[in-house]
Amino acid sequence: MSEPLLALDGICTDYGKICTLRDVSLTVGEGEVVALLGLNGAGKTTTMRTILGLTPPRLGTITYAGRDVTRWPAYKIARLGIGYVPEGRRMFKDLSTLENLQLAENGRAGAWTIPRVFEHLPKLSELRARKAGRLSGGEQEMLAIGRALVANPRLLLVDEPSQGLAPLVVEDVYRILAELKKTGVAILLVEQNALLALKLADRAYVLDSGRITHSGPAADLATDRARIRSLMGLEVTAR
Ligand SMILES: Nc1ncnc2c1ncn2[C@@H]1O[C@H](COP(=O)(O)OP(=O)(O)OP(=O)(O)O)[C@@H](O)[C@H]1O
Ligand SMILES: [Mg+2]
Image 1 (tube, protein in one colour):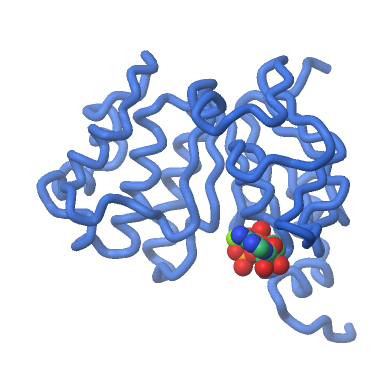
Image 2 (cartoon, protein in one colour):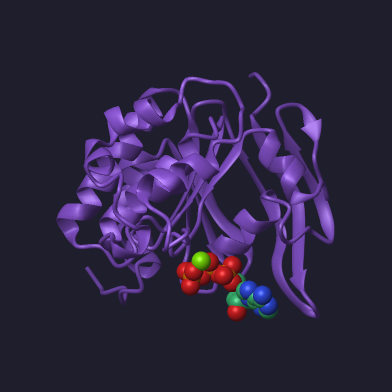
């Protein structure tokens, strides 16, 4: 098997004295979609922050595209082509849609330009002059995805894209992620809604209190009803 695009090996990440990730190992292959699932506080966002160099690990190694990038500063990791769609979207609210996209273009040559983003996300094109702070939640999520794309990532880290969105809007967002998958972008996808993420993902990991407690094909996990119910914070019922 060829080397994975991203590999975490034995990662431990702490916030002060609080140990948040314990011995986390995971991989994402080139063009692969990998779901990272778990309850609130499991350590999903911390895993992304660790990969991005925002919260460096105390122990373990991170390899990306054949290089050991452990403890590299965030700006250097971003330059390697790792895009981030953060939880809560975080954009410049007083800047227009177009201006937000322009600021995110970082000169990495590649297939994703602002016109191409508008082609794939026509709604954003219509909203190009509107201030980001005036966009709806779903529109902001699309802008957050567009903003990550114009930097031409090989790997996209997407944190809870469905959070706070109406079901129909969630469908739109996932349609876009599915299109991205077809273009060959690798995606590490964090979701509270396990079933939704598993429909898109090739493989999945489950994090529980900072440890990986399950890994395997997404389709297998999707049929494990007891695990899905507990992942989605539902009580496991008999039968
Ligand atoms: N800056 C911080 N300082 C101290 N503890 C933190 C910090 N950020 C997160 N934590 C703690 O680390 C643990 C994991 O948090 P994390 O945000 O990674 O969880 P998560 O799986 O993304 O949860 P959610 O689904 O609610 O977004 C939690 O117990 C959280 O309180
Ligand atoms: Mg989180």
